[in-house]
Image (tube, rainbow, N blue to C red; front, side):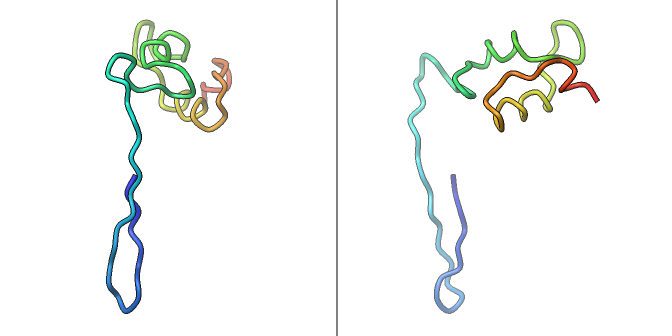
Length: 72
């Protein structure tokens, strides 16, 4: 995460934070691995990738959305 910030008299600086990523597990969203997300989240077509709306719902609420909550 990089955040820009104005410092005294128009001098710029950056603030960043690091995190650890397990090379075996990979990225996890709210405790779910990417393959688990692909299984439980709604997709536009059968066997397709999860819809962005479902991923956003998961990240913001921490709950897997129902199909009716993702469909517009």
